[in-house]
Image 1 (cartoon, rainbow, N blue to C red):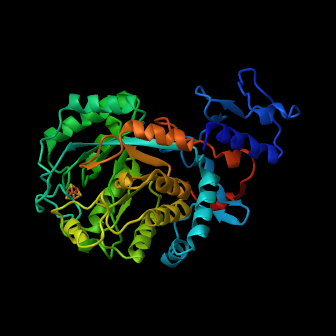
Image 2: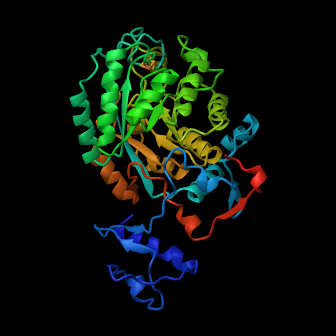
Image 3: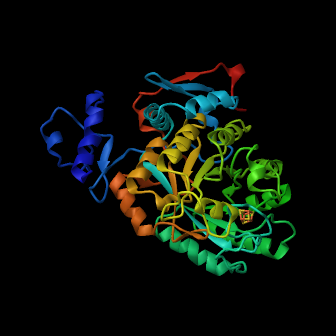
Length: 440
Ligand code: SF4
């Protein structure tokens, strides 16, 4: 879509809805459609510095972990047209399966509408993931190139130095990332006192740069979670990967319950939870529904749900199994853009206030396929040269992608934008009585 077409669309919709506008002095609009409509005044849209798309006046919800539910305290549901959504924790598997199984066009329409009820679809967060300690992990995750149990191309490396990590974070920030995630190939943090001390330093340093800081370090106990929180950790990633039923087929060295305990420790420490899964682990569609059911029935939905496509790596059990199947040139086995979009769309509907992150495997999808995923409700990507040990599009390609789609990055430590649909009064919000409040 050309810039002028984008401008046309940005200005046409509110005019049809009969919203009154008045033009601020700073407005630099030159578009013909506006100049031929002198009775229309503009105050909601201003051109951005590049003049290639419009930015709306921005209002944001609180971001603090203790305040983020405040605007929703007495909210029951949101409705636009025939579509109603709410933040629920009592989903049944059958309900989620029904959504997951909708005809694709209907699922996409619903998810896209729910996305617009709660979010500004123009805002997409860019995150960078750095492997601060690669390989040599004793766990047996059958998809992972970093396990010592699998013969893969990965050579174990020692933990990176604090300064190296901070330099990488600076590069990521300069390239537009607002969340910096550090991953270590471990079963658990355990008694690694020295390494933990360095990691706390890294967290403080990255936080000091104004970036959101995330870690993925395996299992954590409650005290470690507390120390990370005190050091300034924003979020902790710990994926459930798949359904409880399929999980033992993928990993045997730690249980689903172990993972849930780490997530609870993170939550109790007041750290934002990032927890999602991987498609392509040999799971059935019922396992995809099962994973979403676990996530959507947690006492609090994760603030962040990454959806990954397995990148099949030679030497891993799942990689080798995939080699017998159809694997595309990027190593993605048995997962197509429609699978990803269906999973993202279902996640968006059942956890409407969660940030859904398009994660590993993104490289294998075309821009058009990725757009399908954003339409389904994804609102974050991982960028950078590496996503742990697999390729990820270069930063500048992502900038081009953002420009093409008219996306803007989400600032660090900022609450979500109030949805333009909400601001314009198109979302009907119903409230519960004080006695029935969903959140304390
Ligand atoms: S725990 Fe993490 S690093 Fe270790 S094998 Fe599993 S996925 Fe790989």
